[in-house]
Length: 313
Image 1 (cartoon, helix red, strand yellow):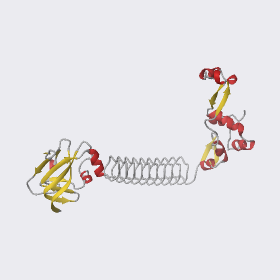
Image 2 (cartoon, one colour):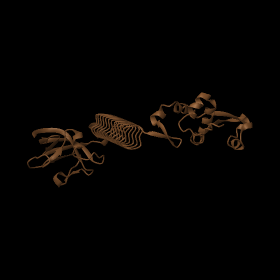
Image 3 (cartoon, helix red, strand yellow):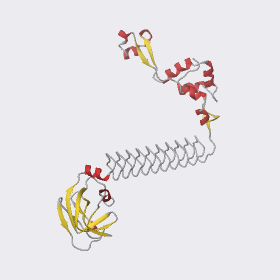
Image 4 (cartoon, helix red, strand yellow):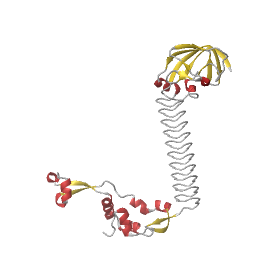
């Protein structure tokens, strides 16, 4: 412990300008000068303060309702670590909370404490836009993340809602793979635990499972489906297709909904998904239609129920 004199620092008080060292309440005023007799002892006897404003909140709640003041210890000062005590203390001025946030953070626009990044509402973040604590990544609501956009803790990957994931987009914990809803998966897109392969719904799988197609077991894995020409073709179904409907072809309901047809001669109709799909099917070549119809277990009725596309048209 070091004894010195004449030190500037910071002190935190309750909203009523009181402190309770060692269980006894002491009333202060701002501004004001105060003295105490007796042998100084850090955390034992004396009026305590910190030379660094952020260090105050190692000992007090980081609460905007508390009072924070700039102080000068003009008597004897005893220091141990980041905390000091003195027998003579002057409270110079109250520091507004906005100024406190600026003092304790190196980063900008932070409402937390000891942030070197910007726009953090948590504490000790070196990244930006974090509401959690001690993140080196960005936009995390969890803690200790080196990745980005995590709501869990200690993730080195991104977009995780679980904890300790090195992969991305996981809602479980300790996944090194991606997009898992479970724990300890090294594969991807698993809903379960401890899977080394991908696209599993279960636990302890080392081989990718076969999937159901058209309500029946198939010899395809989900990866086979993802890489199939059929899936690629179906992903080409257009969205938000519009078609001009002439007044002679309009139903009574359409005429009621679009009364301007009397002057325009019709209206521009936005096709729904099934209508877009049917229009897409009509435009396919016979070869491409066969790609769809030769999927394992293909069933035209089930295909229609799922897509709204009638291949028998």
